[in-house]
Picture 1: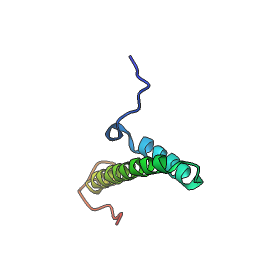
Picture 2: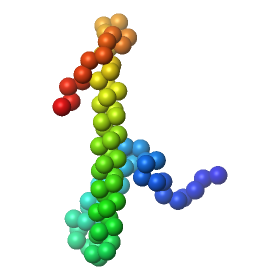
Picture 3: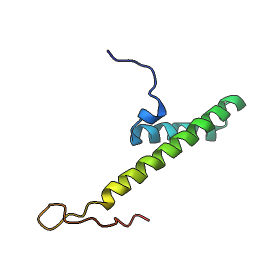
Picture 4: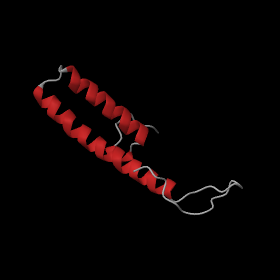
Length: 83
């Protein structure tokens, strides 16, 4: 049984959250949203931005832990250097 109800923000993948955030930015930049809707959109955008940053940080930590050796196997933990 599937539902068309929107997922809570925390259940979104990075890609879904980023797509929604891009849509919100476009809507806000258009200047067509009424004030109350703009405020609601801004609040949701702030939550989505934080979620994206959290997901990126978690991904960076995972990458930081993996360094592949010449044999194709994980050799040792080393920072990935994304900073």
